[in-house]
Length: 217
Image (cartoon, rainbow, N blue to C red; front, side):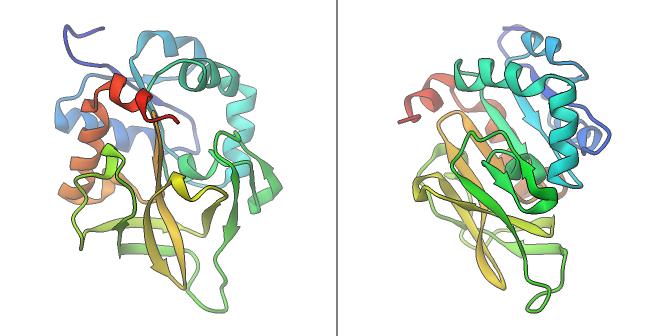
């Protein structure tokens, strides 16, 4: 483990992402971190964050071109590295997205659907309430009336209810966080959600790796 007894967090850096904002938040929290520009650098960190803004298809095009899916699969799915997806970083965990008809990572069963512009303003942009739905330790500290910052036109529709960690209402009840073992993700931007978002980001960096892996099922 680098930096003595503290895990080093890697933030995947790509043009359509929100990597530097996440790194600023980690720096503010005093969390050792690196921006990762190639998948080879994954061996230098203990945990990894995939932030995202923009579209699922463009994100997957980048990840595939830079050979990230196989590297992440080896360390996160076959291994035990804790993973956090943010915004589009949550959506690409599923099998497919209606956005650009993207084939995604497929770590979690389900798909990603668009909000209806006939019922709500698209994109959703601003603060919205998040309701905890899981006993997973990642969301254990969420308050009942906590509000977080969203920017999204699409939302995940998981096939397995056990993956749902939190929900939010915006025209429909949609999934605002997922958690399965060492895989965690938020639809909202933790790094832009004030003290509650920073608390959740810091929780990800401190959760015992062995505990997370014991929850894989």
